[in-house]
Length: 326
Image 1 (cartoon, rainbow, N blue to C red):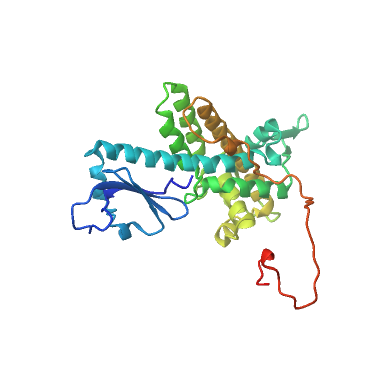
Image 2: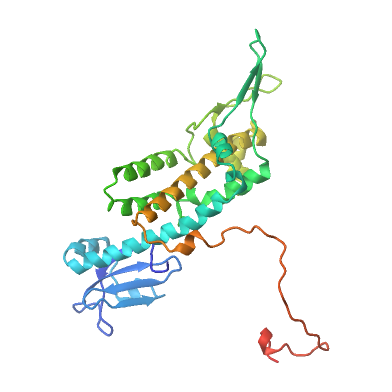
């Protein structure tokens, strides 16, 4: 929804042809993700849309302008519309991204995904022996890489679908519901999402220390450190600092740590999507049906399209219908 913005500014909005120094009516302005501004004049309800920045319309975006919001009832309504538009835009973008994550092959078997996210392992010991084996079966690396790429926007703070923005939007609309279990569910999901710290050192499931054949031991690193060293060092970037810090562990240990973390983020994404569906069904969210039905992944990679073809001598101008001047 293009009317939703990244910032809401209750502020003086001058009439057309009236300087900002005169006595302008109050208004509210928001900017969508494409950079266009949408202003609402409170005296007339007129909506002004423009690609020009607020200053071009005499908009005052100083923080103290926010104190004007309660001085006029219509300001409250305008502000409410803009905030709701911003939250609905966030949720619209999230639904499409989350459905793409839900459609990933790793999520086809929900039980297997749950087991992956909980770092399920098998200990193998012979009776009477203290040494044994730890068996861990993980998905192919390329499958995990694509899953990590799909879920990554939800942990990027500047992204439109960062999980905190999504949960804030859900929380905003959940306030209208008498169902306390709904707000508890949002709080529980937020608590789990907050455990995902790309720059942190917290242990989600396990920590690892490596000892080589010469008895040299690595630092004890958390699965968070190893997982995001894999994501940002081996997959989507080449973060030399993270790679250097985990060099002794190597790519295998980074991958082993990343697999459950990526699985956990997928589980959380699907849970958040299901909560969004639940709120929409309850009438708390006005999201269009096509967000839940349009294609979000490519399943068929053999394309057969009807075409027309012409031939002409070399140098013949390209016809206008094909974008040429001939």
